[in-house]
Image (cartoon, rainbow, N blue to C red):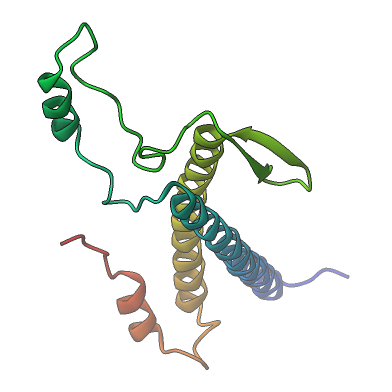
Length: 168
């Protein structure tokens, strides 16, 4: 017994909608997980800055260091690299880190630890933005098909999805 063309078309549309809805839910769940990881990284970086007694804006500028070093002009380099997280803290002093994605603790130099966390934070920020774009796209696709019509009207959803984030 063969299905007629209209029935096959409707069945295909339902399958596509369910697949998109499942991808939407997976992306939302992954966003929640990413937010948990980002918050953990942010807390760890804040703790490291407290140990080093720095904030993102508390480290002296390289110009200040140049002026200090000019007063005692030896054969030392004029510009000294200053890590914004380490500050005057000894970057070789060891500290503990739980390696990302595992339950393994390692004792590593302070500078390496915060560098790993900062790189991981950048990756998570990028992944989060990508997931947010996917959520917008899937929501818009489902709305166009009318699958979300009972919750949000397609016109309102379209205006929300097409909004652009602009930096001031």
